[in-house]
Image (cartoon, rainbow, N blue to C red):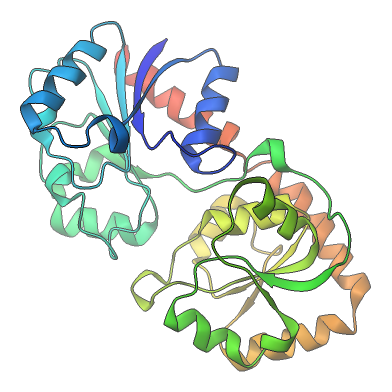
Length: 295
């Protein structure tokens, strides 16, 4: 099967598009990669539409990922199924609302269960043609920790909310920001514990790719409270340590400082769990939907 995969393909060794494209290739899906942020820059909708019509002539499916600020009119006269993957929390961003208001999609993958609630409430025409597609880890990066250089690490963007949560435990946490690709994974592989705090109160059920990447890198993950249904979906109910406050985070880190054997036990469980939650696993789900829609 050949698909037109529209996304942000300029990232190398990081980002969902990079890993999913590799997985598609492993499953013999021929991808024509179109980077909309590069190729659509400075073009009007009619010009973009001409590009898409030309590139879609020889494919079975159009697969659009992210698509911020794109107009549904760029898909005018497209006569093959279009699948959309909205990879950002819909509660935080409305830059794909124009796409979601349209009727151009055959299926929509969304980021979380709270995103599904917004679909039901604000885009009810998509209610029965949408499903949650969880994040994952690149199987290529599933490794054990390199060493114990860091006790714990926070390797994500620092919002004000996150700074508040981390402040009390700051002496026990290595803070890293603006690092991507192999260097990003090297930091994780050099840490025993990775911390996850939600970016905003508006997306408290978010399950960021950073959690999966930390587990793939051999870390025990200590996280602010996560969505129970998502944890059950992923088989992670007893794998991730959850905390409800900055004080509880501080206490947990102090506890694990004195219990290194318990860290190792959780790292082993994390490794076993992440093997079932790779981008190859998610790609299989996507390909199954592609084939269903095409047939």
